[in-house]
Length: 349
Image (cartoon, rainbow, N blue to C red):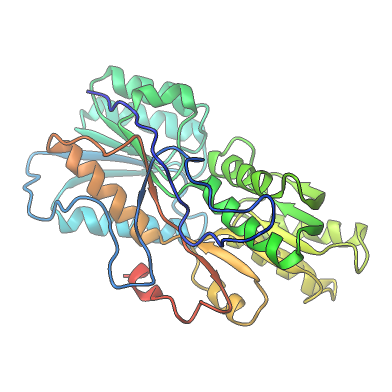
């Protein structure tokens, strides 16, 4: 039975309450439920406890977007494999290497293998609609992780587990608005348009800056996860805009931010503008925050994200439904003031 969606309030963890017209905690703006993974305390909710269950005879198929793209992705697949091994679950894991064609073939293979459930981190949200439809027609439940399918495909899916890209973009943009006092010129280094987290983080940014005096003077839309491409675009941008024209850079992820820093260093423009990261899963970025190079970043843990997804997926094998279609993992915003106070070790083990 497919889950009937409920529309409940999501309050983004760590969103700063502020007087700026666009930015306040947005009760009811995002559908779904929030899974608490706060790092301010000693507890993290990673979904249902399935540690005592027997999964003998079950086989789970997994197709992931790109396991080698960056630190977050490599840590995610490692945590997923370790969690499956801990629960003694027979698992077939495939890496699409960011190629939708490969991922489509992998889904067909998993269906032919007769797996009991599929976890899918799509490489393309639009193309994934036909993939999950095929899985559903084969009678196999599918959970999408980190990147949702396009809305028309949700009818074929048990649910989504992962962070909300909209809230990530909104949280970081709100902090940027506060620092810039609601006005300024920004450059946006975003992910590819066919990738749902990039679209969502861009929407979060847009929601936050609407009605303010923030101007996007340059935007690059296919940077996500590629440090070298970000560096190339940022070099071009710095050549086009002399000192004083750019107040901040809004980056889709940590790799985009690192590429921007490379370009700034090369062009002798380091320290000139504030840098904000919509979401980071690379803990090396924490040192940039401590040193004031990154003004603020939402952080998401690949370990928490992977383990939470596995726990919810395995609970389905035992006859349970997900609490909601959208099961969002909360993501705190980090800056120089709170980076040392947060218990980040909980997110790394």
